[in-house]
Image 1: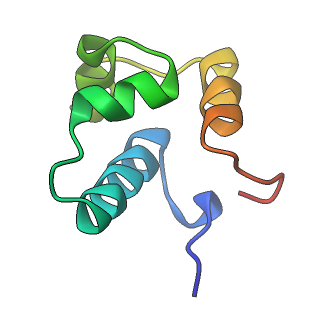
Image 2: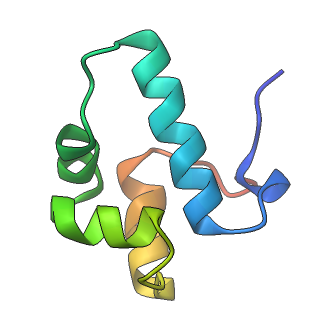
Image 3: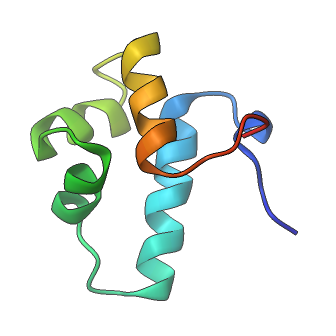
Length: 73
């Protein structure tokens, strides 16, 4: 079963889940590589994941584009 973004309470929770999934597939996949894939700095990703930075709508749309998410997700 594929988990969609609608089953998460926040972008933070969704991104943590995506990063964890990528690390399961490749244990050496880093937060830095994930940040690069999302088009943000590693520091910004860290702040988002620890809840000290909010994600704007514009940034959320960029994440959807970069992660190749469909409209339902």
